Length: 337
Image (cartoon, helix red, strand yellow):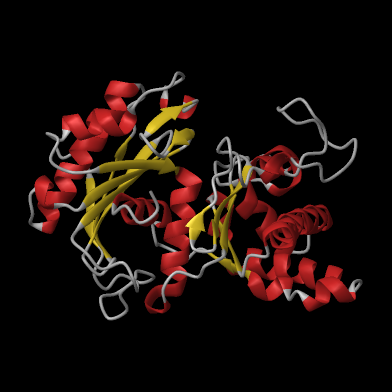
């Protein structure tokens, strides 16, 4: 049995189409892989920057498992595109860890079973026969490139975008002046550990009141544990919609915290767009509505904030578009090396 779930993405709802290529991204076929702690999601992107084929498979932890799984995914995607691996213009990988973009090394990728520093790009390059360039990027950095491409389409990448990931924690990928902003030690965008509530809820980082204790999926999991296996964020929003007073208060506090993250990103980087992604974003428009409402409420108290149009800068990552893998493919072309 084939270990991969495969799909052709032509014409699927929410997918970029050939009629609206991603401006400035022309070239040959490229492959992008979004490698997480549980799954590998890969896409083959055509010369216009449109994702055409997709594969999913389980992540195998450890360096050899990650490299083998990545190589298998690249080979399968190239075959789906009808070309050889050597005909790809590049392969990009997004991983959760600290990445040295110059040499493609990764460290602290504990979710992948990789603790020390390893030359991941070199290992995959060799496993693929040395016939295609391989570039590695932090997963949020790859996601902001993909989110910018997916939301701007034929208009080209907006120069200043933040991808706000709401999942187990809270962090952002930053595209500023059209370039990835990684920071001196790769920690740019780690806003989840800014203090939101002085002397607030304890955080695993050792401090208290951190943003991610209020604006993450984990925060909702802790406050409203699921009893039926469904995601807690969805349950909270459903209960709030049904009028449960406790759920309404929790939802509104969550919206305020996410709005605070948006405000932080705009005030520090003046990004033109904040794209919300991550697991919590699956709630969809109800999430966007309450976050915008929270931002508007704060703006009514401050002419300065009102002048920034915070609510208008927020959007959701397009449903069904694999922004992490798409961004990794664009990174793989060398544009953001």
